[in-house]
Length: 383
Image 1 (cartoon, one colour):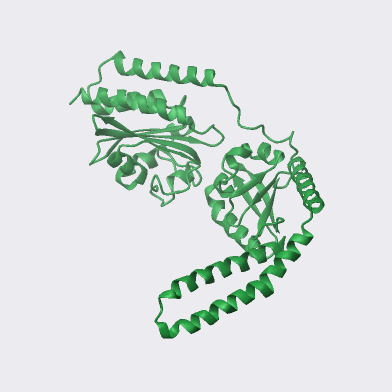
Image 2 (cartoon, rainbow, N blue to C red; image 1 turned 30 degrees about the vertical axis):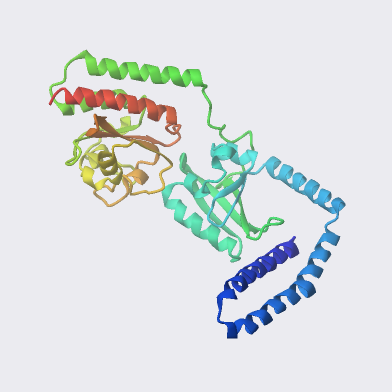
């Protein structure tokens, strides 16, 4: 297979040289003999080198051998999928190519969703840079590596990631095989790990969203608010807890003003305390909305942003200590929704889900978009 790749590269180089010769037909008449000599040299190269090479490759590539190779590959794929250890095959940029059954149970991420996405994106933010660096080192031949990381949905559980280089048959680049194990404990089996992300069914999801829409409409119509900030706070309280762990409301567009911040229950009564691991309600209340790129973009562009496992840790700015809010709050998915009426932005609602909670879905984003118009209409009536 390596010889086939080498032959393909040689043939591609020949095709490029032929293209250069075609372009050289426009040279002055006195220089044409040189071009002709070069063309004859290339023809000799085909006759003496490429054609015999091609004959050798076709002679060795018999149907029996090809069939045996396919059977071998199918056997190896089956073994990979049935390994009792969580195993992933990634490239030098940590993009997932394969994830076996044990790994889907261990990470709680479906193989179909993970394929094509960076494995580093499923890790806690502090571990991503180190994992990418070690993966690149293994891929370029610097030897096997092992490091401790944390899954974003289970940040309290240390995971030992062992990386080794692997050269898949018929591929020009080195891949990296990653074995995941709970640090300090025996390797989990497919049965011992957490189950995959549950699918509650379309009917259940639709019913939950309809209940939320009804609660929002009732809150907006039950009694007339006296200020726009009061409308935002009422809407935020409907969304808090049942729909999002954090709800942050900012009023205005050109000049944003933060009016409401609602966080997890254990954060609500600790506004003046500082914790080195968790962000507090007071941290977000003290933020300038203009320092939150997501909020500013929503206020300017008027489009909803849905992010699962946000890649940019600074997307919602930093707290007073200089730490990224998304990292300290362990945000696993977010919705940033502008409150728009007739093209004019009245404010911005930002919703966070953290830890093991299921990520926001497209259906939930659409429902939130509908509620945002109702909230904007209620605010506009106070102008």
